[in-house]
Each structure stands twice: as C-alpha cells, then as structure tokens.
Length: 345
View 1: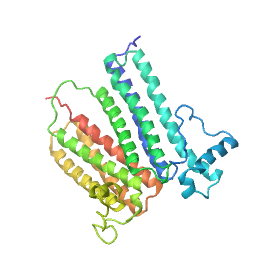
View 2 (view 1 turned 90 degrees about the vertical axis):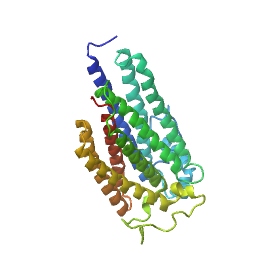
View 3 (view 1 turned 60 degrees about the vertical axis):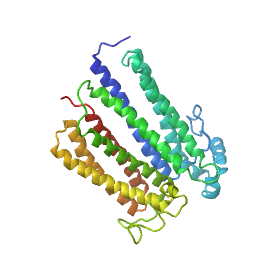
View 4 (view 1 turned 45 degrees about the vertical axis):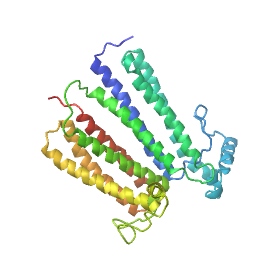
C-alpha cells in the first residue's frame, strides 16, 4: 500500500520522525546526567525490561522495592539514613529515565512499521533502520551493565561503563541525525568540499572532549580544584602521573582527568575560532556557513558553562545544561560535516 505523496514528501516525513527520535535521545542523555548528578542512578536495583513499565503502586510494593535497595552497597555505605519517603525522592528520576528509554522504543518501532507498510522506506533501506532499533536495545543492555557496576561492592558506577554508555548514545544520535539530514538534503552529485576534512577533524576533537567529560562525570572529578584557570596554586597540578602504569592516570586519576578535560576544552574553543576565521573567507555553502557561525557561539557558551560549573562546585542545573550544550555543539558539528560532504561543482 502506498500514499499519494511525492518521494520528497515521504522522505521529509521519515526525516521528521527520525528528528523526533533524536530529540528523545537528547532528552535521555540530559535526564541521565541529572539522574547521575542527584545520586539517583542506583536506586533501582533490578532490571525488568518487559515488566518494568509500572512503578510501585501501593505501600506494600514501595516497601518491597525499598527493602531491595537496602541490600545495595549505596544504601549500606552512603544512604543508610534513608526511609521509604527519602527513597522515593531518588527513585523517580531513575524510573523516568528508564521509562523514557522504553517510550523511545515505541516511538521508533510503531512509525517504522507504518512507514515500511506504506512504502515510505523501501526494502533495501530496511537494514539501516533495523540497525538503529538494535542499537537502541543494546544501549538499554549497556545501561544496565553500567548500573550493575555500582551494585556489587563500590556504590559508584564504573567510569569506563558510564563513558561507554555515553558514547553509545552519541553514536545512535549521530546515526539517526545523519540519515535524517540525508533525507532532507539529498545530494546525488558533487565532490567533497576542500574544507570537509577540516570539519571532520574538528568534529573528532569535539567528540574527544565530550568523551573526556564522561570520565570527569564518572569519577566526579569536577568536585576537586574548583578554581580557574589555576588548579589550586598552579596551572599544572602535582600528581598528574601518580598512578602506575602511566596510562591509568588518563582514566582513573581525578586530577589528570580534570586537567585533560580542561586542556581539551580550551583547545577545542581555540580550533573552533581558527576554523571560523578561515571559514569567513572560504566559499562555503550557506548551510555550512550557518553551522560555522553557530559552532563559534555554542563553543564559547559551552566553555563559559564549563568554567561556571567548575567554580560553583558542580550545581546540578548548571551541570545538566553543560551536558545539553555539549550535545548541541556535537549536533552543529555533524551538520557542518554533512553540508560539506558533497558540493555541486
């Protein structure tokens, strides 16, 4: 069965659906950050992907859920003072985070079935969208794998697993956004713009900075050295190579992780400014020129938010906004790369 719409109209509707999914991923990442910042991420100690839609609905169910949480290392080592009422305060954010993940599955699956039955998505394109669905399901499994790391002995999730969870979210987001942009801005001819490689390298630098931020978040490294530009009494603090072997410092040493993120963030801003100055004189497509301008303003805002978050000892609201703007900067970088991939000659 097909609808009497032009291919352009069908592509636009599929693209809008993918952009809605991207918006949900964006929300999911920010909500996940808030969940982590408020210490709510380990409040649900069981994973029920099918039957976990409903929260506790009675006092008996709340008590049972709380008793399960009381067996966790987080309760025993950090939150032993909590009663059921206090527990509800941290439970709801994690519940909403998981509920949003399940909702995303429905928002993706139902329109996908509709689009393939109406031939909006041709058969040869099905694997592309099925891969998105599979990656989304695997992301849920990875999220539980991350949570499990904080339910054994140490009441904190592994920074490695947290960062892997973050990277996977960004990859899914980038994949869907790229497909959506390709539907909205199809280009069958043309060559790569000479600035395309530079845009790709800049996107890689932005991505690396975001990944380093994942380790900062996982280790709560932003809670030390709440000064800028100095770290304590020096620009290069002592103890950067305190761990052995040396490579562990980049991922497990709080001082080194924060130092690396600072350096990457300032370097990213510098490179963005240099790129923008060069782009002003280059013959870029209109969409690329818009993206270059937006990237400059967003990078400045992101560095300002990062410094403010650090100086104020990581307040939840400011830290969540900082994470959201990171996704925005990544989005703009993808738009820039996409707009330069093929330019009519």
